[in-house]
Length: 446
Image 1: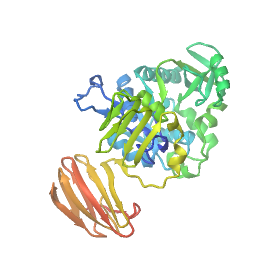
Image 2: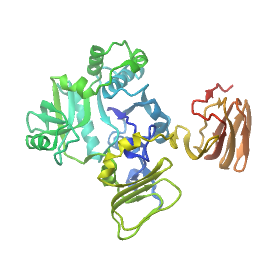
Image 3: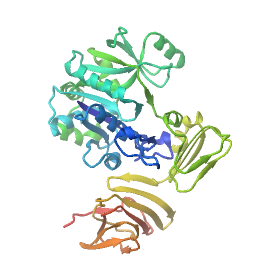
Image 4: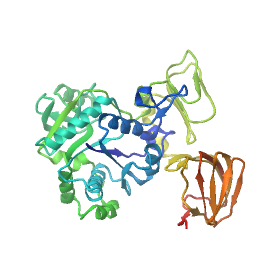
């Protein structure tokens, strides 16, 4: 089974835990159980949406080929959570789902050698679902491989009239039916009529043969192959796969899905899917009702007599909100001018601890066996203090072993990197009048 997971979004609706490089799919809020095949200690082990979905696909089909289509800003986080070998179709910039799917299709065909007659299923990376969803994904893939329709959709049986989703109107009530028409996101009264008429939520899951999407992409965009499409990507029109392809296709079928399916797009819906009321260091007294806390800070949070609230704390900020009102936070976050304070990288993570006019203090965590790029800075010097672990530092080609308690001074212009043997933590103090993420020159290590 070939699966393409669409991993996009800027994450502002789940501020302060998410940001431009850390979208909602990377938040570790789902508690692992022993059924997952891993030992779970008393200290709860949590997984993110992308880790959960990736694991669920493998549980249903261990031989599945999974490709993740994402922007280049998310590559490091994906490698951090899924490993260096995860297959990624990198989008140079965000251009909505049709260009992303076209690029992923060209990547599979031209770079990975997938035959045009092979079926592919495209689905979002962030729904909250159970294993039966991925059993349905496999059935959808089989329908796309063997059926007559050019596109097979998954239609979600609606649990209530929703204004948030588009609707698929099937011709019959059969488990798999031809599609009569599509409806845009409606107002509440129209949504009620769609549900009464047998309409299904459009869950953004599409099955098709690879050659079909490549042919449609060539009809709608001027490119020759994957490399050419990648080079022209920034010039492409932003348009969804629904608008560009699905709504113009005559040969299309829909497969019903009646299992658990929840779009975790806001704090309100996300907390409904959480198995525990508290993640992190927090306490709620017995008078609190319907309160959820996610705390990524080392300091404790105490809640007393609270009702219907979400509290989220991270290095980027603190949110205390009524759950219903939390759906409206995006414009307020857009108005903030704040640098990213935490990010996961392919080699580990960094967390900003302190910001001053001419200094920046960061906690750098390197995972065992990983290291940074060999690089230099022109406008700042750095002081590294090793606080835990063992590893090595290379300064202008000279390697030295380091351990907890060692201090390394790096003047501006000096080439440097750090590698971890065990997990390595470094307090990095950047000093200079013009500290910027753009002040970085990568070098080849001889």
